[in-house]
Length: 435
Image (tube, rainbow, N blue to C red; front, side):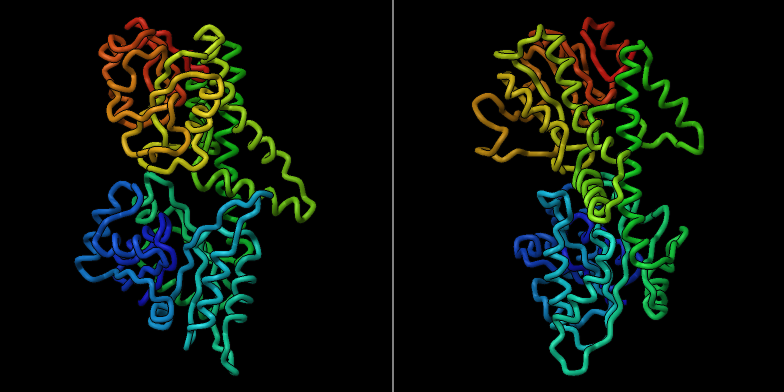
């Protein structure tokens, strides 16, 4: 099948390459010439384990090509996936301007029946809007038929390749039998449940899934505060409740809170949809509130441990991305904490195995510098804060680090290292209810 992927970001590129793996011919369309050139050379413009090797494989085999020629790409492909960004607006709603532009372009250039698939995360009712936008782009006296399908992605950054190859489920939202036949054929090689429903339900499934996972994170984080007060190890609680198959152990690890490009945006978008329809989602509102407080909770622990005043203190921050195995810093709790530390007039030395901050942009400056190695970062510092659970940080030689530091304080924002082991080395360790 000839498939067009519009938008060559994280979702679009991963989706396109998986269809290549399933034997389809794929074209990636993007208006950014630099991205197109890099991808055509087999170079990924973002970090995702295993994906660049797959890209190079299919570029060399001729299974995927990249272009900025919108007219030609739309005319030559049967199924069109819309994988463009839907960023959060000031009121929390999703910005659909990129989706609208793509839909109108499809209407303008299509010459025969197309199946148009929204892969981007979009609010409930967007499939109907896409249909209207495609029609508005058509200029022929006799409109050309098409179908719009909602087919949300459920990829985890850092594990996108595995998730795409081994999905828990595939959701297909359409009322068209013709489109269903096409989508079934497209996904016939996958061994997982397929949920066939209408577009609105499909769109809601995506938002509900991410919001529920965000809720699990905020639940265990708020519970960790009580465990802290009661002297209970929240890791034991997480294990004890996670073994209940009705609950599950995923997303029950206490820490600095969620971030990234999906959870914050999707939770806000669902809250905005609820507000517009006069149905308050009070539990979800609390989820957002707890998440926003979590870095402040850690900040207070840091202040207490270092004598209350952080002015002039030198602190190392390990990890900038919102989670391991990605270079995504959007809504990263690490950057929120860095902002608060700088406001408290601390001097910062930061490190990340993948993320490279751009010189001259915030937070880099006279009081915040990024260094190439962990050793340089922790040298002569009063405390080290672990903000991202990279494997590199889990395997650190803490005795060697202690010898480099001015004061032996560790603040574990991800409950990722062995408290007893580092305390035995003479460190003052603080995590989230990690008693």
